[in-house]
Structure formats: C-alpha cells, structure tokens
Image (cartoon, rainbow, N blue to C red; front, side, top):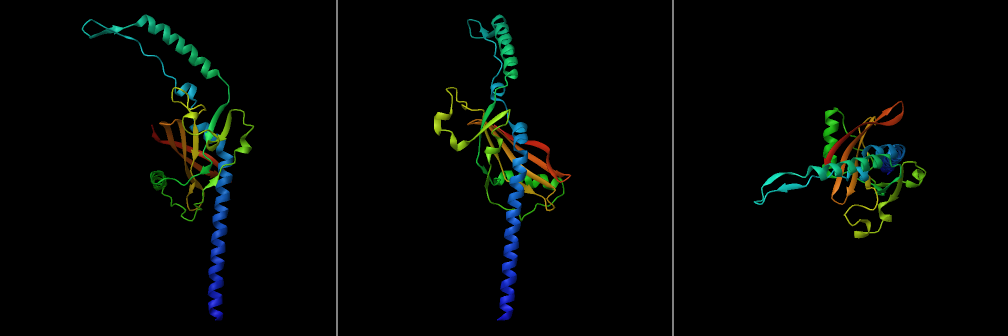
Length: 228
C-alpha cells in the first residue's frame, strides 16, 4: 500500500510539473507576441491604397477587321500622369491604417506546420514537442495608442457584405492573423506564421523566424510562403 502511495505521488508530481511547464510556455509565447506584434504587422502588411491600385492600361486601337493596329498613346499619357501624381499623394498619406485582427493565436494548419518543420530541418534543429497547444488571445488594448496603426478584432466588424466596398475590397485596411510559435528544443529559435488578407480572395502568408538574442526575442527573418 505504501508503495502504491509513493507511485501515485510521483505520477501527480510529474503531472503538476508538466502542467506548470505548459503554462510557462504559454506565458512566454504571449509575451513574445505582445512585444513583437506591431513590428510583425509592419513587416507583413500592405497598404491597400497602394497595393490594390494599378496603373491604367492604354486603349487598344483596332482596324475595321478587328485587327490590333496600335494604342491610343495620347489619352494614355494623360492617364498615366494622373496615376503617378495620385500615387505620390497616396505614399505621402499618413492616415492611420485600420486592421482587423484575428483574436486567437491559432494552431498552425497541417500545411503551415510542415513548412515550419522543414525550416527547422534546414537549421538542423529539433522541434520542442512539449509546447502548449492552447490557443490564446491577443490583447489589442495595449496597442491603442500606436501612431501608425489602429486595430480591431475581426469579430467586431459586421458580417458578410457589410464589410466590403462596392468594388469588393474591405472597408478597412485588411486582416491580420498570427499562429502559435513553434520553438526549438532549447527555446532559442521560434517560428510562427503571419497572414495578411487584403481582400476576401487576396492575401499573403509568411513564416516569421524569431531568435533569442541577449535574452530578448527579435525578428531574424521573414519568408513568404504563399500569395493569392
């Protein structure tokens, strides 16, 4: 009986230690994402005023048989001058960009995890498999005084067509989402996924590689993984 009590005590102790380790891992992740959040947004976002505005195409001139014989260069020159002038104004626009942010720091998808796993292999590092898989929430309140961006949770925007302009673009500057961080075994390197959506069918995905330097986590590299 005494032996069973000892075994039971050992099992409970391991369970408590394991739980404490997972909770500690979750707190570390939240702290890192909070500290790097604005920098990551700044690195992966696109300004839709520029990114989704394209130069005009010249009008094509056809003969009576429908064959292309040239372009209307006179009208095109006027349009391209106007476009370039407007482009300069857009670049100088210092209005704050409003982003919809996914509340959850989500678990990477199978495709994303394979990309992360492959990157760790190139670094010849083993993934820390003891990391907490709980999805936590980003606290946007601490970023409300940011001078460049404004943030709202995506759930705060109206659903369906109410979030779209007549041309199909968002009424805000796009959506942002970040995944949980996958660490190496020594917790010196971390990789997470960052996603920017400029329209419902337009977006870019990234791997964000972070490194612990002098006891502080910093962005080491950002690599594009997909674009649509």
